[in-house]
Length: 64
Length: 254
Image (cartoon, rainbow over all chains, first blue to last red):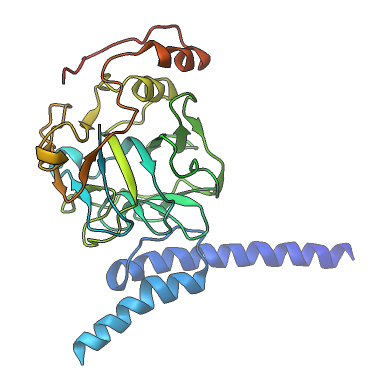
């Protein structure tokens, strides 16, 4: 029981680290291809959809 | 006196330009008096370079301030409810010093009778790395450069931008007496006094010539512009634990 709880905590920490790494990477990508008008606690899907994908889509339409 | 920025997401804003005296600060303080008609999601309160230095209300009711840094960005996200209700005269101060130990800064909210106090945060990240260059972007109040329609719906009477992290006492000093110009102020403006109908050039009283150029807006009444010390604000000053009356320095004569 205790071992499983520890594993769960360890898993949360690992996810947090992964999210932090993803945020750092998204900041760089959004700087070049989207916008950085978002806070670090925004849902990752919202960051990708609203602050990256929409810009890429607009560029793609312009390129057509 | 104040500038009324009209409906939400209208093309109303003030630009203070991109002079080197207001660019890429390693430490900074922003202070404002405003009164929002509506707390509009995604409205930008101030910005210099889109995203890199930005204060924005979020859809979740929170609001945040970002500063772009080379490694991890600085982000303070104030919890929902931190901004007073619409129609409230509100004082906002934001501080950050990238060279200081943690915490490197904070967000403070006050009213005409309540000294600015630090908000609660949902996210508090000081960030790390060098400050990202914002020297080719305009310092914009109530909008952001490159987005002509991100203005909040409300009034703003005072805006100041300093290149140091002010103490809470200095912040209170400005809050209750906007004739006090901190020595590190690089922009210090009382909106709505200058120009026909509030439009035109808004004088920068810091002496750095970073005057504000107004786009749209109208002139409006807005209480918190204490050009001269007023006894009715001394009670709040005293309540904050300071000896009264206000200490004056570098007085401004409008």
